[in-house]
Length: 203
Image 1: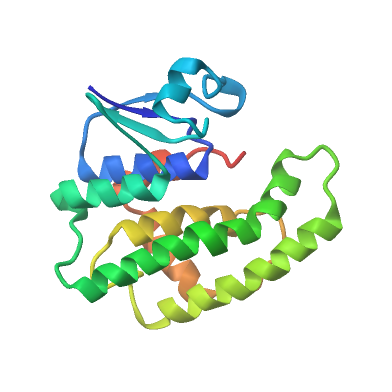
Image 2: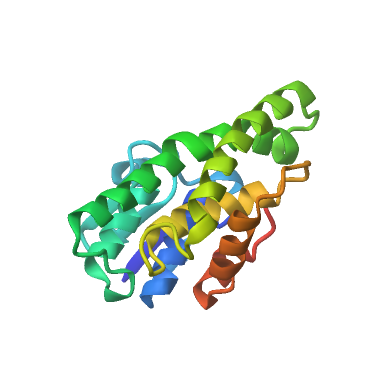
């Protein structure tokens, strides 16, 4: 039985859930991380020494890191098939890395202050929002003349950036309106497989 360890309020778990649902794969999701604990237990650390979520388990195969899970599912599931062209694949990798190392980290401080801090620091929030606006402008410009992040089909780059954009567009803060980003997000968020991961309250 395929298992996915992680709480659904984690943006990284959301990516894995969305991909699994797009692929039509059966799995059991086990609450872990945050208030659910488990991630410090020795049994969990044996699967994922980082003590983070998500962790995907298929029989004896264990995989952690959300974007690695996306790549694995894209290699094995026709519904998420990667393009044959090596340059198109490289562009998918480019945007997956950009999401993980640039876009999401830029908004992290604003997210934590607005959703998880008892006394939000407005200076920290403002700095985080300012950094993220620059990146949102990059994504908006990229999406101005296309329906999906890479190529003509929905893919794992849309999942990774879609989950990040979901947080960005739902922060209780003023943002510059990005019409192309908003249009793209509305399109991919309407997909049936997005319902489970984007339907939960942000927390």
